[in-house]
Length: 323
Image 1 (cartoon, rainbow, N blue to C red):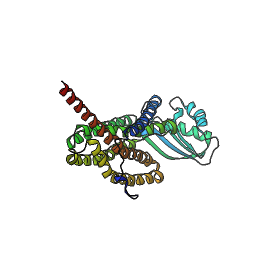
Image 2: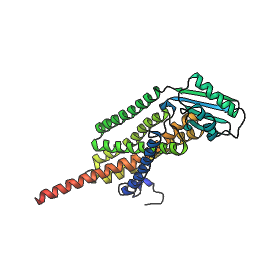
Image 3: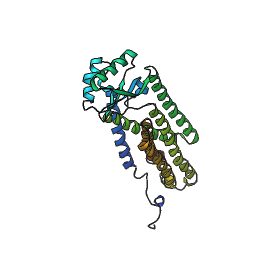
Image 4: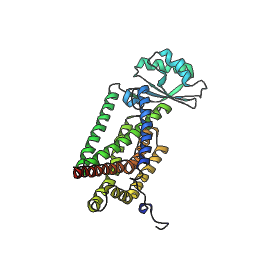
């Protein structure tokens, strides 16, 4: 082997390193499930749901002069609590530069809005309202229900397509890899909701659906090469060896495709507006995990599954011969 020989030709077995990938994925999944469980306990949802799903009003204020008294604690004690229990302390989404304030509340009628504005003006001074977003309390839950239904239908459709295009074992491994990706993405945003107060909007579901498409695309690229090589090499080599060789043949193309997409999403995440950051962040995390899972989860599972089947067949033959 020469010094400049490409990585694809080196004697590196993905299947033989299966315990490493299992430990890495298992650890990330456990951490993600813990974050999701904590989020469900605190927010009654796997992630902290934003206005799009819960309904209510989101109001952005800019005070004319910075005010050192403008803080979450003072707003809660001096403004929100006197207005009643419906204005909870977690209504404060953000306070920045002692001048900007974002409040999230229940749906407000005209009288309640006037009370809130007057109390803020009396306590912290004059302001201008930068934006007001309102979502009906009935539309939000309906949007969440529709999004989850779309995710479920997508998974069923992918399972049916891969089963038809390949075989059942390929399909099951692909679905497990997709579930792996979704758990990691949701776990990440559950942690961000718990520790950074990040709320997800409807674009998060859009990103999750798009991630499913990207992830299964990467997996099918690898699986298709495995199937082609299996047709010609299965008489000489076992499937684990075929999978390793197939991965070596496609890893560079798969990596380049993912990296170029990640560069675009990274630019959108850093330089894009606030409204697109949830989408770009979810896509970035999802494509990163999808590129990983197509090789180190789906393909490894497929190889181990077939090795287990071959071992069972061998054991049965030995049992019959003894009998």
